[in-house]
Length: 107
Image (cartoon, rainbow, N blue to C red; front, side):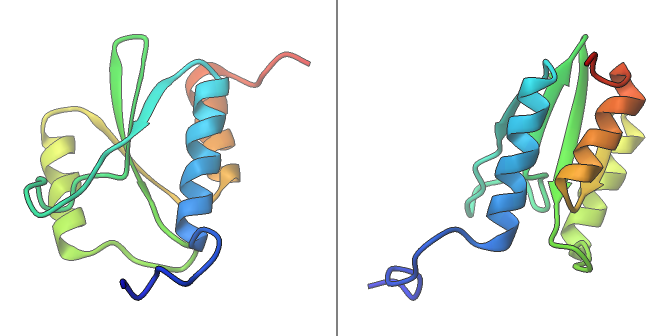
């Protein structure tokens, strides 16, 4: 039995990730969670989002948590190829990101 098997509910970062993913989808992004395992590129972002031909790599962190060295290296690689990499800690970060990219939603 795994150490998490008896725990109920999602971890805080998983809840943040789900909220960000759902909000980006609502705002018209094609977005999905990047499955990570021992064969994944080291430090790959949690989410991949696309809109209007632009790819966005999104790393989700709990507030106050820092990126691992491998995540910083991945960010440098992404940005060296002129792609967009964002670190988000909250739904508010996703909302501000969308406002900057596509404008505020119509009410």
